[in-house]
Length: 214
Image (cartoon, one colour):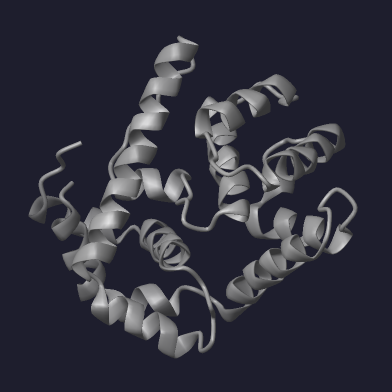
């Protein structure tokens, strides 16, 4: 889908989208980021609780060993000058402890990266639905990686176009008015907005009006 097609729908439904984002979620994310800046997350229980709650780490079948290794990876990558999503993804593949979709692992790779660098967009089911991405079958690992990386690159491209073209002025204004002093990066604001867009299934009611290109 073209960026302008998506942003037009978002702008038309801006009030509903922003109303669907609660203050508690914003505050929880701010705690997560604040605690990340304070100390080693492998020792910071407040960070771990905030992260697990915000990103649903306890809802996807990860055991305690995985979670401990996950927080160790956050520390491993904390001071990297550049973050490579493929490297993070493969690290998570090595320690995953359940038989599930690679897209879930990929999603948590982006969540790890976003914790360190909030200019990295989140990839999750809601984003996939908004962009009409298909979930790759876990048949060929190399193919899965290629598809997921291509989808994340598409999300990044769309977000960059939105920022550079100021394509969501009404929605971002409403976001800042509701969440005063949020101090979030524009990418993180877009994460919240697109999550809300995917949750509300607004696209389904407009499917005849847009041309899915991906």
